[in-house]
Image (cartoon, rainbow, N blue to C red; front, side, top):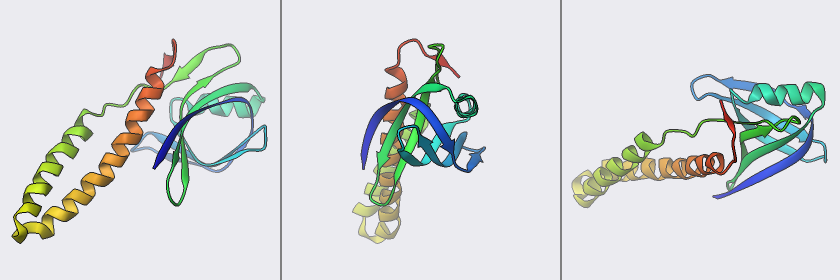
Length: 158
């Protein structure tokens, strides 16, 4: 999995169908079409910032989008973390708390390794290690997301 931080400056032509995920706090757009013809599929925007995104589309404003591109084997995913409006105000999300996810990964990794070590319970240990691996990949993406937010100068945190 390759994760890159990108900045796009310009107008947004159109957005696709939006699905609001209330539990996770994301609005997922099926696509976003940029002024230069580029189409970003599976574009995720935090609910605090998608209002700024909607205003930019409706009024045809030129904006600066700060987002992560997560390249996986099957699909690319885009995660917006900041929007700069034409009046130079930079809106960003608050960094995500990752301590609980880190604690989960460490404790389950130790428990899974111990269960796998005792061959009798390897049936439980190996699936636990797989779950840790999946959560670790998610933790890696979210850590980059937080680093992108922390790298901004004077954002207005929403």
